[in-house]
Length: 164
Image 1 (cartoon, rainbow, N blue to C red):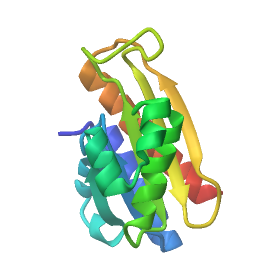
Image 2 (cartoon, rainbow, N blue to C red):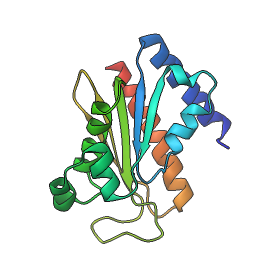
Image 3 (cartoon, one colour):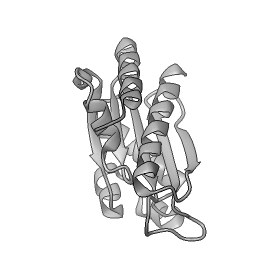
Image 4 (cartoon, rainbow, N blue to C red):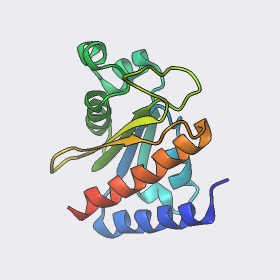
């Protein structure tokens, strides 16, 4: 299902989390669970992956992750503020040490001049430490590639969060 290089990277990340005795949670929108699917493709991932939330709609972001309606109204679902709120909300709702979130526009619809196809916001929240954020502009490279690129960035942010 996933390319061997991506599987290898995920396995190394899980081993790093295991060695640090840390657990993680995902909060996904535009990736629809791909981050969790990749991580759980690796045997033994259950000792690192606590759970995963797929919150595609704004209502789900509010009800499941506690993202404020005011934040959604002020910034829109695809924004730094919402990515941060998703990661921080996921961390509050489970026993993980680190949470990664992703929200974006994978296309082919849903874009605007201010928020084009390929715009993705990711965040990593930690129980100890500041929440990290990354804004990506992948361009209109196709829905599947945008989503997989977001998964790759999520892995790199998780590795960065663990190293700090």
